[in-house]
Length: 268
Image (cartoon, rainbow, N blue to C red; front, side, top):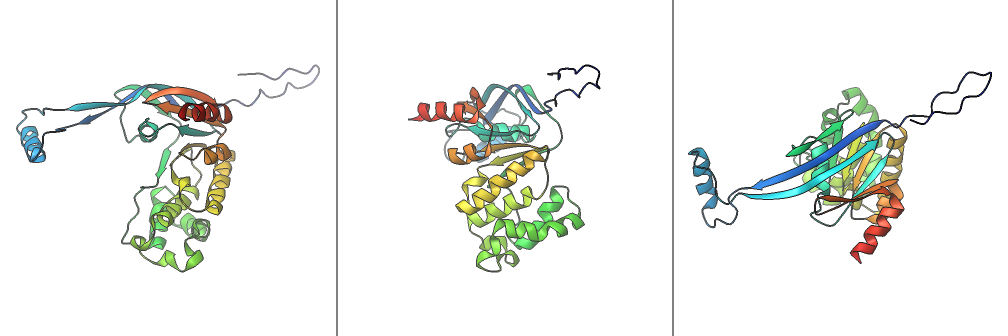
């Protein structure tokens, strides 16, 4: 920790503000096991029978999705995670959220990580309004807090710009409308660690600008934001640091412009 220079005959100033770690990913390996791959017709029934009879399962394929990745995230950072399809971006977010156990290595978090993906579950047969209430409660807000923030959530999402959609069942929404509502619910609460998986790829540019502004607010409120996106413009506009994964390995970790320039040169 850097310490400010002491001034003579005066009270020494406070030490420079410490960088507070919120997520530590330490040599993490994540392996998926695919059972019964390529066994042909009837394989599901046969595999179930083998498992029930404890006879083992042939054709178990191991997919090494993340290979020895290490990095530390700090409070107040917005970190983009980039890489080609299948590089391990979403997998590492799910591991940080506690949804995937590492095969080896450790993940340490300060506070509760919240993962927002475009496929985050809301109840399709319930109205948008009811989903706002349930989503807010699921994130730990009280009923009073959800009621206070309800109109802001609806306005932020833009759901009602072309009609009273918030009172209709979610199954009547387009995929973009549903994704905007999910993001709006998640963004209504301050998070210790908020992870966004492709959520900014939905909606028009006006909604993307609102989303990017809200992410900057979350950073100022001492949170840490991870953003997985194939949209390098959103990464540049939102993040001050980028982690580049490729084939499950960490290729680069550094300032946004530096890493994205290297990535774009690599993918040309």
